[in-house]
Each structure stands twice: as structure tokens, then as C-alpha cells.
Amino acid sequence: MKKTIFFLTVILVLSAILLSACGGSAAKTSTRPEPPSEYANKTNPFAGKTDASDAGKTVYEANCASCHGTGGAGDGPAGAALDPKPADLKKTVAEASEAYMFWRISEGGGMSPFNSSMPSWKGTLSENDIWNVITYMEMNFK
Image 1 (tube, one colour):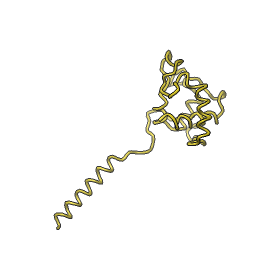
Image 2 (spheres, rainbow, N blue to C red):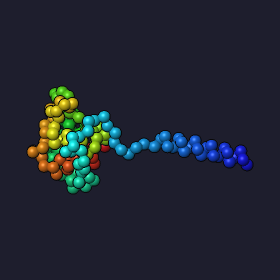
Image 3 (cartoon, helix red, strand yellow):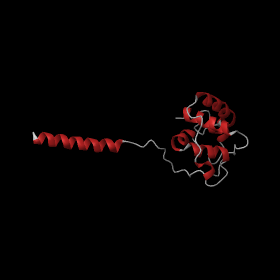
């Protein structure tokens, strides 16, 4: 009886160790730079809202798809000749915070370390438009 209890205890402990090793973190991890302080705490007020995603799709198709492609893979026709190539937004959505995405869309890519051709959309798109695009990306580029 003692051997059985000991054996079951060992199996239980090993199982717990194995299961805990398999668990992942829900937090997004990234090697991307942190957004500047004026963007760092921004959160999407429209996250998960279908109407915002629908509005974001319209803005995305008009302003982003030519470079990033209709599916966000960075394969749009206008992006073919760019160096560096447009970002794969599926990867961005998987790895980056909403604050990071808001910052990059707002300020564009002309600054270091990005040095890309992405224009600044601040002043062209409203904050709501930018959040709608982020909502669209989060709900569709998985």
C-alpha cells in the first residue's frame, strides 16, 4: 500500500511539472521598441467591436492595403518596390501591443530604427480611424 501511494505521488508530481512547463503566457512578447511615453498607455476603446472593425476595414482598404496587402501580409502591389518591405501585419498583431500599433500608424516609419516608407497617418486619420483599423487588424489578421 505504501509503495502504491508513493508511486501515485511521484506520478502526480511529475505530471504537475510537465503540465506547468507546457503552459504559455497570454502576454504578447516582442523585440519591438517600446512606444514613447505619449503612446505607451493607450488602449483600444473599440476592441472586439464589429462595427469598429467594419469601419476599420474601409479605412484599411483605402489607405493601407496598397502596401500591406488585403490580408495584411505585406504583399500589396505598391509595397513590392519598397525597401524595407511593408510589415506583415499578422505578425505585428500577434506580437505587438495596441499602444505600439497606434504609435506606428500615427507616426509612420520614417524614424530610427524603422527607416521605412510608411507615412505618418496622424493628422490624416482621426484617432478613431486609427483605432478602427487596429480593431479590424486584431479581428481579421490572426
